[in-house]
Image 1 (cartoon, rainbow, N blue to C red):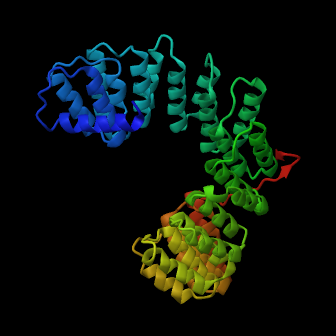
Image 2 (cartoon, rainbow, N blue to C red; image 1 turned 60 degrees about the vertical axis):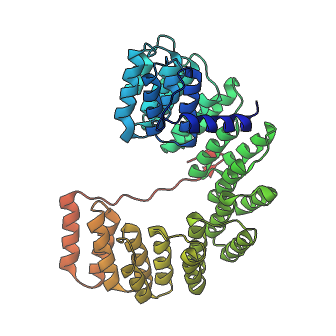
Image 3 (tube, rainbow, N blue to C red; image 1 turned 180 degrees about the vertical axis):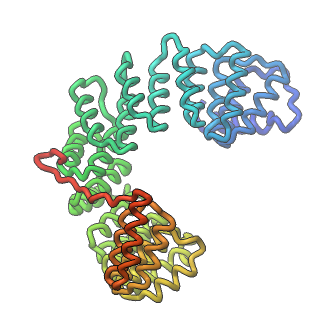
Length: 450
């Protein structure tokens, strides 16, 4: 039976035996009930209906099996459902399936999704011989919780690994800012040569190169894809575009983008537009946006962030206003605080402080540090000391540990000759033990980040 026919049959079964209706088929066995539970989890990813099917299943004295609980546990996917997940765990104990490896692996995944890493680890530790999916699940649980060190200890203790194991650990390092460790781990993966990286693994590696700004490692990763004989699909292509753009090689990013041909999706278009904006190629950015719309690819909020950033870099006030208006009028996208920040930055850089204030005062949300920072940037360029003072006080009010804001405010007062105020700001810094940390940067020398 083909997949489409199976889906149609399942939908018919659901309509005939939905728990809200009067189920009178006493011969329906656990396979059908499990299929119903699984179908509802896949089609309607909520926890209520699968649970109601399970309860109706018990009402008709249908015996549960080791498939029932894994399917049921898949419906628990957030901390708010943790108590329900614990109840299902209790039911698995009652029916004697708590030691089944399929159930245990599903319990680990459920507790991970619910944010209860301790319970996930407890289930794992109770397994006499955890299988590979169980190892991968507990590593993923610790990675999501930020316990990268614990995840690495588990990873090193695995009796065997597959590509999911390596990818999970690599993802953990990148997700929590340990990109150098990710590159080292990938080097170990190559040396051991036990498993072959897939597109997802390479995408994680490219994300590490992107965060480190390591062009040489990124170029090597790109070449490695060809060595593996893998096609540059749209997901991998988008990762390459973002990596090359962040590492300063916009020409290579553009080449990857063009080579994607008709496979380009919204993510690829947005990545290229943002990359061009980042490098100040505002004309190419706006031209590419027009091409995107002509190709009937509907932009999203990320796309418009790139376009507005290009307008900021190019000082294109009229084009920026037009794009900002098109967001809501033409594409029904509500501007976020980041979009307002771009527009206020655009007005400020152009010396239009009054327009920046007007937009700030009409925002549907409260201005945050980003907005006040954008206003501050424009006010400093224009020499509007009064606006600088207001913006800096707002930044300090919302982020009391922002040492740079205190120093800037003190310097503003000093420039105005208000020495008592300048000294007062410095005293507040000392009292609150707020420090301005020096800036840091890194460079790549012979493929080494220093």
